[in-house]
Image 1 (tube, rainbow, N blue to C red):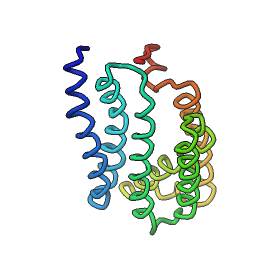
Image 2: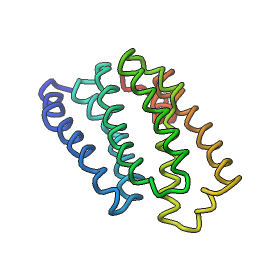
Image 3: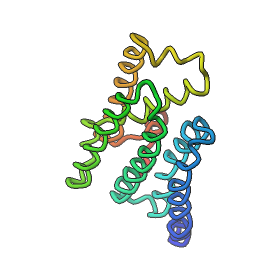
Image 4: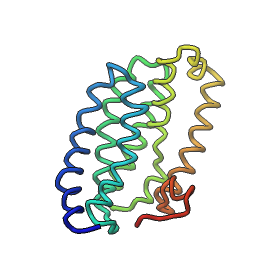
Length: 181
């Protein structure tokens, strides 16, 4: 990619992503499934591509700082949104767990920290908003079903964090076998 194209991504792409990620959480109360489950997840997934293009596919550690701080910003909105939830105490616990991991990451600048402070909060929040959208799923927030769902989410999240932050492999790289950086 030419430097001019990379400069355009840096000049327009990164500010656009920041604006979208700062604005979207305000719309969580309008339609949580669309805002969080689709748009925030999709934007979060592709902002790394924009950073890679902006920096001409060179390894860039600034992205992790940018991404994790904006993620946490969104999590703050999600936590407030989930206050009436029957699983709020679990969500609060996992929010605080990730917050501790973020603080350690900001001090040490080591991605591996997130493998020990996994983002179970984000995944559990998705389950919560699914139950709001599809009331027939509310059983997932009750009793043994909740603990089973939490166990599955924890295992899936730990595996994802291992690949993302220890091996530094993106999900699409596992599928295609191709690394971008």
